Image (cartoon, rainbow, N blue to C red):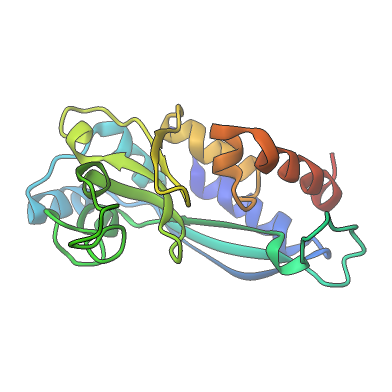
Length: 212
């Protein structure tokens, strides 16, 4: 597993030195040791696959947001506003990824991703364990399925504003490399999975903001 604390540190410097954008937050913590990871597993009676834990040994969490400045001089696409041209990554810490906002490994994301009595709250959404919760407001994230984690499978899935859960077809390392390369550009996850207009929009703005 590569040193993602170093990779995100380099990205932080790149973003903060870019005069076309404003970085409203960039928080990250150094990786955990085996003891910290095992304590969380023991507390909630879970066992995470090795590659998930290897990632968290490189960086404990990262949360950043950047936004295109109003006076950037970049020509916006029709119906766009500068504030909507942004990038965000919110890779949860290991404890929250396991226990969720409820501190309950059995139903960690109840009342956040799913709700009792709502048709959207089918079993697969209840099974989802967010890894990068990049849009809390709309419940959009990339994560794992707990039922597959129990089998040692660390396949990633996208839960988007379509309320669907689809395979992301990336390993943890590939996904994190991808969001670093894309600077967490808004809907870069959808751009990877669905292509189409999200990919076209990302490919329009990224070179203009960050160069080729």
